[in-house]
Image (cartoon, rainbow, N blue to C red; front, side, top):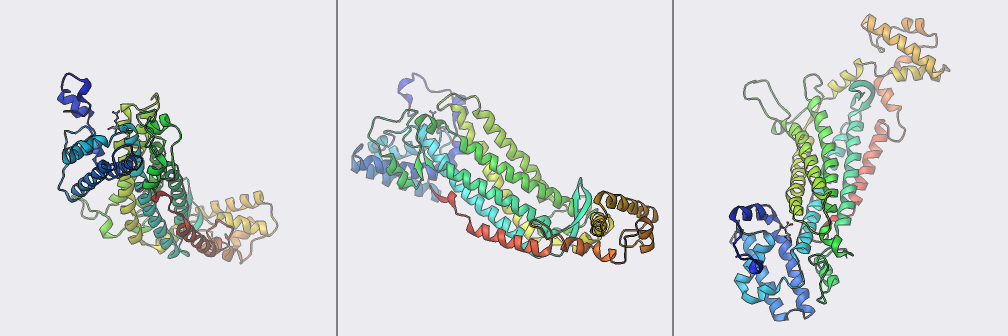
Length: 466
Ligand code: ARG
């Protein structure tokens, strides 16, 4: 029998019951649901809205239910409409009539809004921690490769020399932005919606600030219609996670390229690669490929949430039950991907000789060669044209700028001297780019120090409310 059976003359159709039920996926909210109810019942007792003795019985009953779910002694009833109904029904069956008073001055609408906020704040804090670990791992790998020269690319064509450290630290910046986005999202999520009631609060003299303090929220929501129907925090979190996953996906794509025989810049650890069922020579970057694939899934979750919300009138609508599977999936996917990605990155072997070899063949010092002439007084456009001629000469003669004899250089421009070879050496090209943001080893080393300091500094905004 449903808790709301009073108005109805018939049992609900069993297919409708299954269709309507959310306990299969909202059961993960049991901790938050019980903690929220504990705070609500405590406040009801303290304010005298219910008898303090009954409040105490509710608290004891809920604590017993929590312990039993945690230990596995109490299983979720798949026939229950949702986790909220399940726990309330269980409470009443355990403590009798006092259990029926728990829902005084409360609706499932503010209850579910509370539970998801609490759950997502905890998960956001967990994801922030994981992203920080990944960012530290990126810094560590970068530190070991400050002098590892590799080609930098535009259009996937060799462009100018950088170092592997410089390349990796681009991702450290992305991850720092991910962390700050997630922290801002958690900070906005940190509001107590309980007390909004079904949509219009209540006539009971509830103490929202007391519940807020008991649950550790930063503040209470200021409009009850918004309190029950706001899911911005789900849209925002899924958006933050989509951006994070796009970053992981781009690095995955690079890792996939780098461990191909065409590049061979890195070798994945055997524990983080897989073989083929038919081709004995294969070592496949499945983890990176799956992360790249799962980024699509997160973007799908985000799209589901936006689509679900865009046409809803205020306040609560049942459509909003669809928020859970999407946002939970986005959260679980991010946790799974980041925690698998970090050790894969930590254990991957860098092959500096191969990176340097690739950097040496593609005329990636041509800009530096032109700059050499500019430093001798030639306007940049003329220098650019002269070096273009040199590159054409090299290609025809099967040479590179490093191997082309000085006599050939002089035929193109008389300003060239023997010192051109030092000026266009890959190490010089990298060493001289010490502008803030550049690849010079000392510049990147300073950047790594700065990123580590920022990671250590970041306040854990997301921890509140659990
Ligand atoms: N299971 C519901 C959800 O996830 C709980 C809120 C139900 N409220 C209601 N008025 N039916 O959204």
